[in-house]
Image (tube, rainbow, N blue to C red):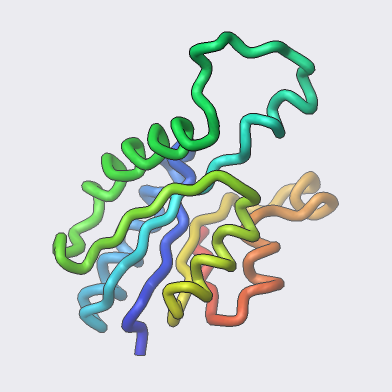
Length: 145
């Protein structure tokens, strides 16, 4: 049923990752699924837009930033007990919602499994990445709280 599972990970949110571990492990084992872990970070230009700061010349560009979060993601994946031959890892720079949805379509994900904090007034008014994914995904989405 779930041959391909997409698991977006926010490498800065350990608590969300930890919440996902038992769910990913159980679904993967039950269906012998391939699990695609994805980390998305915003482009450097997004940070500059609000701060107007000039970055030092050795500040990482978007590709270097993607490489950094890829390494962090590989460390997070070690928390999961998914067989190595069933793991795919990818890091990209872009809009969180758009990259998750595009990756889900590219890999033909059967389910997107993501963690979300408890809703608050700010997420109610502004929305959240999880809410956006649920709203626009063409496949099933399991949100873990």
